[in-house]
Structures are given as C-alpha cells and as structure tokens.
Image (cartoon, rainbow, N blue to C red):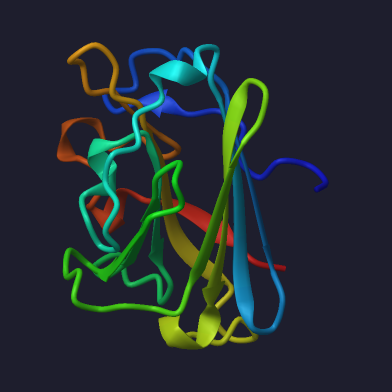
Length: 173
C-alpha cells in the first residue's frame, strides 16, 4: 500500500516503454524486505506459467525477477524470480544451489497477476542500520507468440539483467 516504489519498466534496450503497466512496492521491517508487484495483463489467458519446480527456469514463463546487491559492491547479488503459480527461483549470483527461506505468494486478479515476496534480511548478510543503499534490478518477463520480451527498471541495454554495476539504487530510510 501507499505510493508505488516502481511504476514504469522499459525494454532492455531502453527504446520506449513496456506496453503493459507493472507496479511494485518495496517495504521492510527489521527482519524482512517485502516486495509486492502487480503485473497488469489485458489478456490473462496468454499468461504462461509452466515451470513447476523450485529453482527451475521460471524466467522462461511470465515472471518477475528481483536482483539485490545488498552490500552495494556492484559485483555480487542475490537473485529471486517468481512465476504466476508462485514457483520461486532463488540464488546467489547465478548459483541456484543457494536457497533462502523467502516466501512467495501469487494471485490472479481481473486484469493482472500479482506477486508478494518476503525476503529474510539476515540471509542477505546485511544490517539496514548500517547498509542503507543497495543495488536493485527488477525485471518482468512476458513471453508472447514465440517472442521473448523482458522489461527492466534499470536499463542494462544488451548486457542483460545480471550486471550489478548497472543496477539502480535502492535507498532505505
């Protein structure tokens, strides 16, 4: 609730804006980072959600990806992705063998699907009292008609989502 933290995504090459709206809210308490995302979708029957195993390639489905450079070294990151069925991928960098105790929940609304994610701060190895700036990338994947489209909060152009030096800044108060 409250004002959206992120309300516009752009194509990877930053050549316009995403054709559908994506809204995200980020909040925290002393234990968790909470991420809520509403993915507006005019034709919900086209939403793809086939991956059913944890740490599977949910990015090949409609999905939301959250990448956090929690120590803001612009080199390392934690990686979370969720498809519309609530299947979670979590990893450190591209290592899917790292698993968190993050919780994901999803729902389908009249013209959108939503993701809620609770990420334990202690598993990211940071203390928000001392580390108030993080790197953040958020992406929405929307495969349609044999076409893979990805939209990002921080444009990384042709480098892809996994370059922490190109992440945007998330500042905690």
